[in-house]
Length: 113
Image (tube, rainbow, N blue to C red; front, top):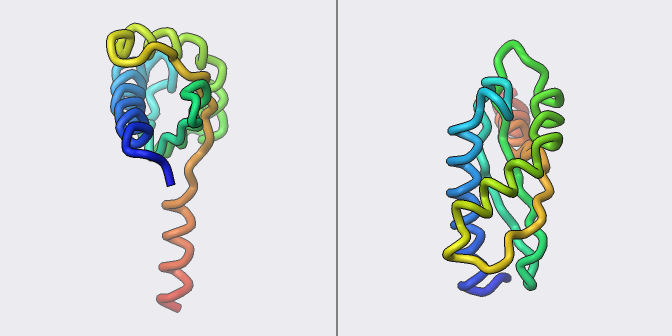
């Protein structure tokens, strides 16, 4: 279980990364809708796992995810500019696809059978 301080930082990163991906969705995500679902940060604040949910009608989800990973340096720079007064260290970002909604839909489908 993480401490209260780490939880606050995770919420801050989730909010800021969500805004960055929303504002720059045309360039970074090729117009797909990307939602930051969970952020987990290490105890020394140097590394953050960012779980994203991607809704891309007519596009391949993995292509959009690869575009996000290709632009991780730009995303981290933009994040650093927006949180420079709250955090001293901008963590390294590692993006992962959050498939919990697909898992939930699969379980619901199985229960309805």
